[in-house]
Image: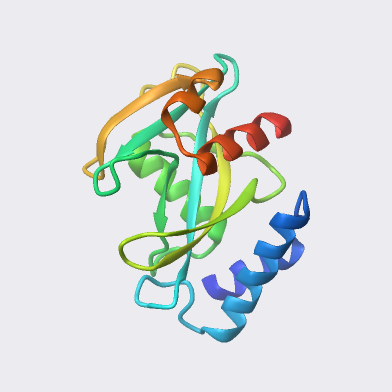
Length: 175
């Protein structure tokens, strides 16, 4: 199965938690049906991206990156790569690379939520997962970040945009 096929399957099977997320789910499916290259950065009409919120449930905190280009506190994530075989695998790879934490595990049940946003390269149709950090995890900053920091659940509203706040809220509901 190709990454494109896996993404279409994930989006078809994912039970959207509300009407707005259902609209996005359908939009993503339509995008994949219309664009055979819809998984890749080269697709100028937008592309599927994969991200994961790194969470430490025991300490009630999340790890955010201060994105080098966007200069915003965000979850880990980004473009899919040719070696990615699944959307979940792409999200886990991105989270591991950008957090420096080995042994992350995705929450079961597939994506947590979807978020469509415009970036300098194109529209990102982001499929957002949550990754649980192992006990005692130590983060290490990557080249894609200006900073990397743990924030308590209640601190996220002070530093992050609406998308990240919704991702944290939805993740907490699933923990």
